[in-house]
Length: 108
Image (cartoon, rainbow, N blue to C red; front, side, top):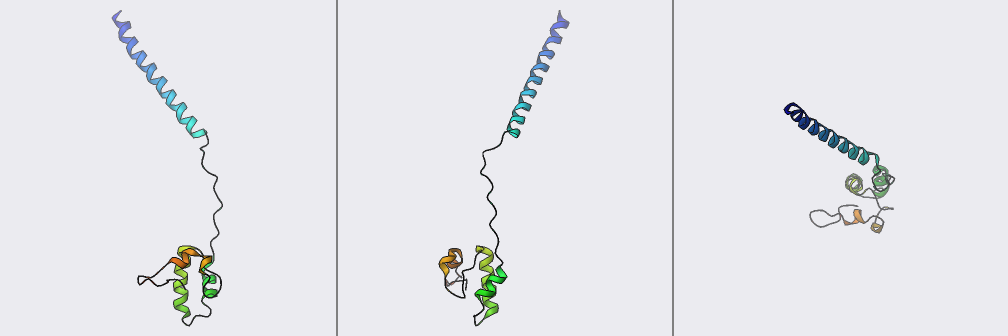
């Protein structure tokens, strides 16, 4: 009788551990297989060619190299350049709101 009692306890514990392991595996499998309600990936916005956009923007500048350097920085940060050679800041608010440490418009 003592032998059977000493064998039953480990057997029951083993069965309990096995049952818990199978339950855990089912939970993991269910979580992996069920689709998550994530939003559908939106198409990535197209990057503009900052060099061409800034060449156009700075073509009439009296200091073209300085203009292109500043425009390139602004374009890289905002991913947009207003149309035309000056003004039109409403087309690109990020570009319009960027300022220097002195509070002047950074972007030409």
